[in-house]
Image (tube, rainbow, N blue to C red; front, side, top):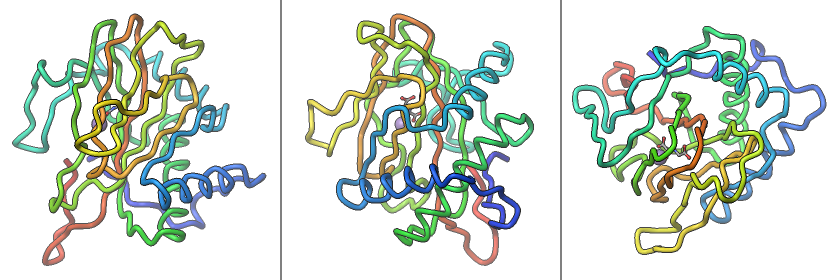
Length: 227
Ligand code: OGA
Ligand code: MN
């Protein structure tokens, strides 16, 4: 399926100039202090470009209507969300590079914050003009599935009046939230159980990748199935 256990460090090329390390350290301290991190222009530019190009090359058939819930409980619900998604496997070069980068983040956060992140699943998302994803949580307390959410944006030249902001609410009572412009290269990370969020309708096509790090909730040796 789409959950990818992290490859041993020896199998993953390290970033030669330490740029990822600096970013990952910033994300780790943001998470420790406030539970979320919003970092504009943070995704390495060559990776953002590769993902953007790859995502444009996907046809409409590669995308399917997004659902809510997991496994047999998966439901399509156009009241909650209307975007289309395409799960990322390691089949494309861009997909592999993305999984390698997110694997590096996973490893860094495990070392620094002892989060015990075990696997990662992610998809491209396409919001056509007018599409939205209403206020929701990515995980529910006690279910122990998705621990950390990661979103990156692939929209060069996004303007303020294009709309489509992510609104991240600090807690269940927050009505104002923090607005994030979905501009190319912005990286957002937050604790999945803690931060309700929504995607406002946009005036133009909006592309993002959403991913989730999960802990291993396996029992009796059976690996927890993805989604
Ligand atoms: C999600 C999500 C946010 C975004 O897919 O769960 O909240 O900005 N996406 O694309
Ligand atoms: Mn979400």
